[in-house]
Amino acid sequence: MSVSITKLKKYFMSRINQDDITVVEMVDRYLTLLKVFRDAEKAVMKNGAQVEVKNGGQEYTKSNPLISDMKNINAQLINLKKDIDKHIVEFERAKPKEDKRSLI
Image (cartoon, rainbow, N blue to C red; front, top):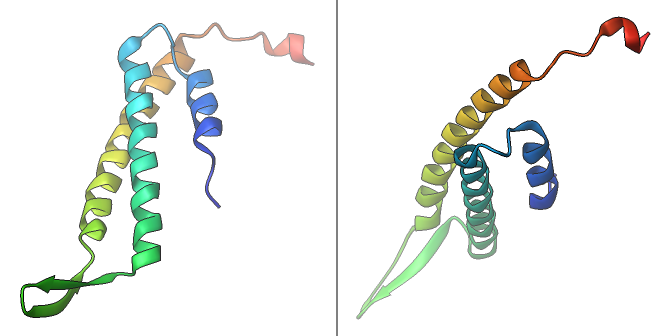
């Protein structure tokens, strides 16, 4: 099940320091890459893992080039997520702690 981009954006924006424009940019870049990844995934599902190539008189089958692109995008998503998570942890540490006794 895919989580909507809007829901992900709300999740990230609620957990980061929105005054830090570099982190906001990271979140936007993450979401943009995720959209590209999902579009590529749809195209691979539609066209298959192998595509037929016609080059002049030649016809042959090769691996769908989007699969390689998806692999690279996935690596970028993982790295961006790690960076965003570091900023989330920093932001949560900087937040004033609620008095636990007031919650009881």
